[in-house]
Length: 366
Ligand code: UDP
Image (cartoon, rainbow, N blue to C red; front, side, top):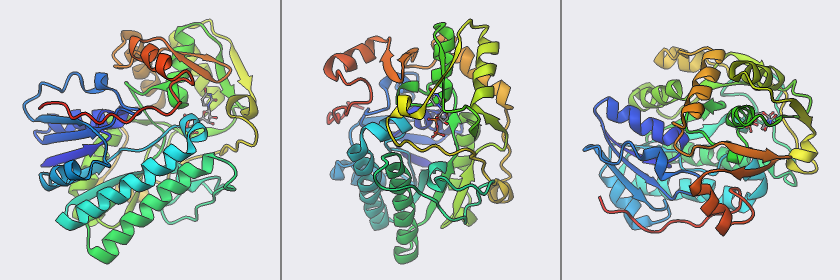
């Protein structure tokens, strides 16, 4: 297959590119480096079946050419991470909705299959777990920035399903549940890389709220395999799939486990949501996927247990394999990254890595 990955220099996108190349496919990526990083694709740049464009999905001419040349588009370009979403709502809405619209318009003209990555965030604060794909979405008020992310991804889903029904575009929607693994950065709020870097730096591990809220963390290797299988399965077209793990853990237990597995002397410090994200922040207490549909459709089965996932992330961050070397210093929710790359970002954007970054317009030579 000839695959195009939008957001291919991001955490999940770069793992997907690597896996597709490993399976013998041809891979082209496009990424504006707003949250992705060239370091994530450094090992792939010289691969004979890999091609990359540091550009934005809004470059219509380039996108038309790239979509034309591929069989399947994996659409991963998005503004993600609770911190980023809360701090940059305009960017979130614009990137998530407009970019998807542009892509679907182009793909519809060429009738190319599109896999849209959505998020478990769309379930919002629904309390009936596990979450089934056809369940109601329960979002909070518009004055709370967090919900703009869920809403933007729900609009993406509506758009994709609309293009499928009205224009016959083959689309598949994957709702990802807390994907973790090497190369994920904690700069945009993601809890596991944040806890591991805090533990490795002997800084307090910052648990927000009571810590009794739960998540199911899924291994990035399992997630990208599922995305590929979903894209290759005809009966998946026009449908929505949860992609995640059924192993539920509290954030307190995660903090304890990270502390124990790193052998860290870090204290575990509880911060209120107000301290972490500002007034009126709402979190969901439980988030568990119903995996029946994806199991029945592609025989999906996670390969790593939760402690194995945590160990693998610790190992990669210790080894600096994560590309960004994202040892994130966290001071009451603020982020200061310690890499050369992020020092540059911080110098240009004193608001920190969450401040809006420029869109890179240049297209690198092939
Ligand atoms: N969280 C935390 N400390 C942090 C970052 C996150 O306790 O430094 C909590 C967060 O409030 C949420 C959970 O960890 O309850 C997962 O957060 P994340 O941002 O990784 O993903 P979410 O599931 O909220 O999208």
